[in-house]
Amino acid sequence: MFDLAANIVFWIHILFIVFVTFGSFLLLKKKTIIFFHFPALCWAFYAILTRTVCPLTYLERWLLIQANRDDFSSSFINQYLVPIVYPKEISHEQLMILAGFLILINFGIYLLVAKKHFSK
Image (spheres, one colour):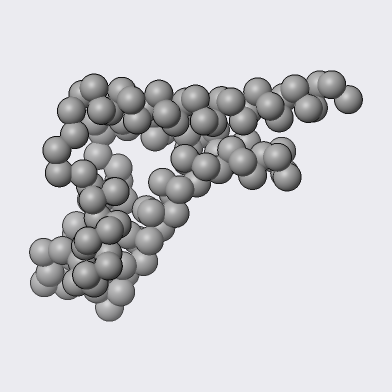
């Protein structure tokens, strides 16, 4: 049971990262997404800049411990997804590039949506 819960939380974590990174594109279809996306983007930006550990990480680890596991057993998850969520070594410069990437993509889309909205 804890094993399944850990996997579910991990997938929610992955989906959150995808939403933060590319969720602004959903604004092109539904503008109210901003009420969910902007706070998520702010949290991600804050977490990157301060190296704050996401609460989902603590939950995943606790669930894995309860399941008597050290990591995720699926080779696909371990090989391809875990390094995205938990990079082993990442420098301060790489974190700043990542934060800049998030801001450029998302605020670029925000500006595009605002321009379309106010040009009507």
